[in-house]
Length: 292
Image 1 (spheres, rainbow, N blue to C red):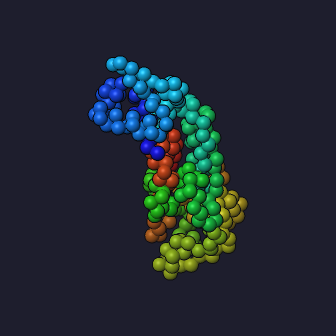
Image 2 (cartoon, rainbow, N blue to C red):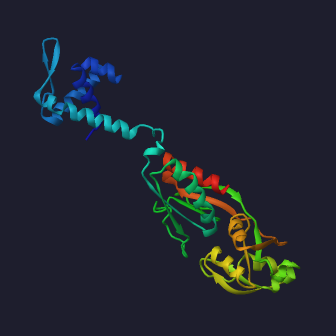
Image 3 (cartoon, helix red, strand yellow):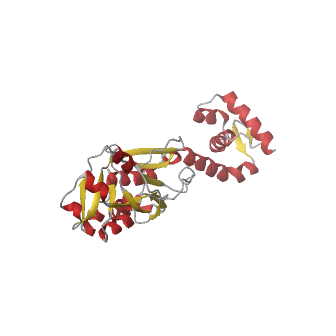
């Protein structure tokens, strides 16, 4: 099936002339005449018959003219560049998955800005999965926020900033009066790990100073770990900016770590198939603004 014949048929039915249709399509008259022959063979109808100096559409041609016009217009809409996004008419649910500290920063910002601009959208926030899943590559998740830089071409990403790892403890913790690496290592620690890991980069950095810490628990989210720090003598290491609001709300103290720890990146990732989607680009812009 040659769908180009639809465009030629539409022009012929509009102009009732091979030459006029050729001029409209920027083709030669012989090319349009050959296309008409193929259309006649495909439909089993003459479509246009010569009557004197003009050509007259057959009853079959008249019957399908409006349908052919609608098909050509619809095809043009499908292949046309994306139109300007009308946020007032946008009806779409976006799924955002990520590290709980970043989601905690993201959702109030999106509710205050994106939802106001586009009241017809819905936002679904999901926690990080304890195991790596292909949900982002498959398009089941629209945006993922975290510190992992994707390595597959199916996923696009942008590093919107970097954070700093700090020690967090309650205000009347002994470390609040005398913070040293030795005292820090000697305290009871909890880690934040979706996989339940009791060791991370902090242990390696401490080992370079000849120190070792005692980890009493691995907790799945930074929110739970901060609650533990607020109600016990445990210490947790979290990202300063991402957890700033939660630390302030719980009355927790933070202290810089004199350790060789990399600054965790803040990564916004999305399926590459959405690169040119105006609605998705608009959402990513709001995520970038909130997390930068």
